[in-house]
Image 1: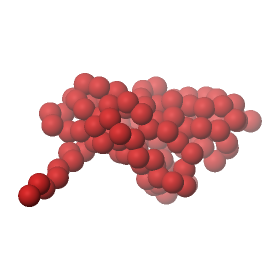
Image 2: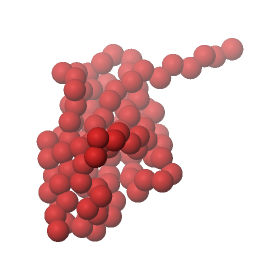
Image 3: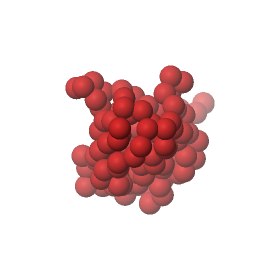
Image 4: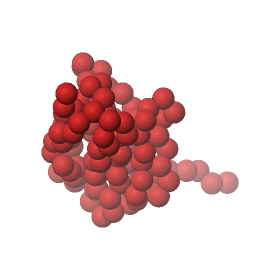
Length: 111
């Protein structure tokens, strides 16, 4: 049984590759995301299947924060012109979905 992953970005300033991936169960898949937006330093990852959107986690600058209940790894760099990588581990039929990345601005208030 093959697993099909479709990758999509809805912005002309965010690039996600590859457009689609076909793998066997048990393998891993890597999806890459980069952006061209000044001062944005966070990449968020989502999975859409059966009309439901699932949040997978995010990368803040160079630190990845995957959600605990998903078997993914988030690595790389979320700054402009850099690449953030989502690795989906141990693919299964339920991994077949559309995956999205989004760029975001992380602001923190300092006192």
